[in-house]
Length: 79
Image 1 (cartoon, rainbow, N blue to C red):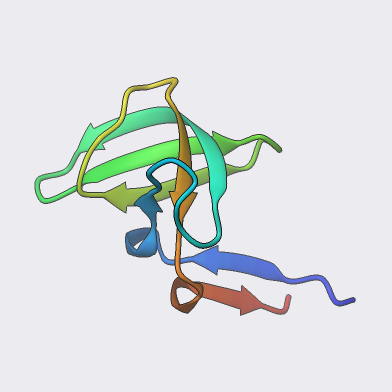
Image 2 (cartoon, helix red, strand yellow; image 1 turned 120 degrees about the vertical axis):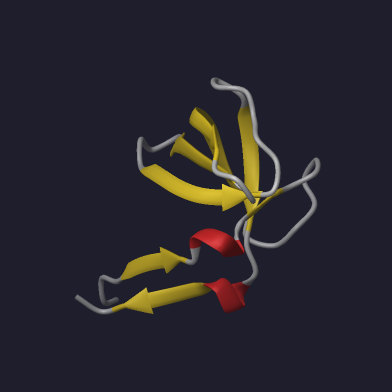
């Protein structure tokens, strides 16, 4: 298969409750900053990939979360 880059729109990510949602991705929160209307969260996946996204609520640094994002918010790019 072809190698692709996956781009998830930062505003299209939500924190999943339990194991509910489509496209679940576990992360550990490394930064949580209030930015007026939303929080900027940074986290790392189990594979060490860093993610930056926006949510309406913050999270504690070090918290283990599962992110969910609908397919409509994912873009595949061919390098």
